[in-house]
Length: 329
Image 1 (cartoon, rainbow, N blue to C red):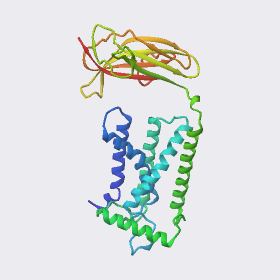
Image 2: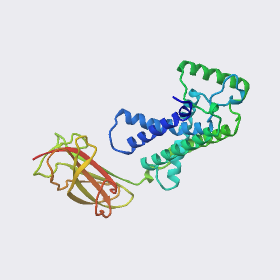
Image 3: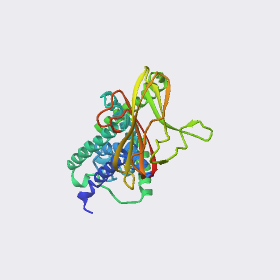
Image 4: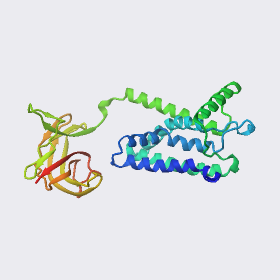
């Protein structure tokens, strides 16, 4: 592998991993443990890695090159990547909140992806400005040697300089970013501790089924239905909005692909309306008869606070809940 490619191989890997991780997180495709690992990478490594790569585009120091004494080796980059990510992601979430995007999965994920892309480009420019022999590149080598070199370098640094004294503009920026991240984390924790949870407005939507004792519980759902009978499901709507609310529910039945990732067909099979006083919960047994038979079916309830759009969907509903079912013909 040529040195030119090795100077940017880590950025290519970061962009590929970021793209796959963003797709896994943004979609409903089940990755299991892999999806969790992708989420950890997006939150705790990739944002910090590209920032560290931009601030430190050069190769690690050698004993014969004193001018590069402040460059980072591979292990230092990994450690710094985690520390910076812990600071960067809360700042991005804060930015999403203050700009009105909201602190939810889509806007925060979008900002993280944009951050990774922008700083990957910035890193490329920073490395190209250096001579080829000074550009950071992925090197082989044993992990034990990397750990030993990291410990030796940090020990020498602590003996020669103050560990908190910035040696250049990059380290000054790092210190400012870390300080801002820490302050934001402390402020977030403090706000959470003192905020009044009673000021939060929300609506709960969930399904109930009848157990052996005749009680309605949120478990043990019957998932095999007869095609000519109304679905034996109770819908619960709990109003915590601070005022009386008028809700409309739309019940649909979807046919999914064999792997459960694509909706092949969808029918509206029922609607209901409910007026719920603040602080109370109503239970509705919707009149909804299945329009399809077979397996790979999904019963979905879409709840709206107000008028229902012409094309109800999970994207425009206020709350949604679903249950995978089988309908016998």
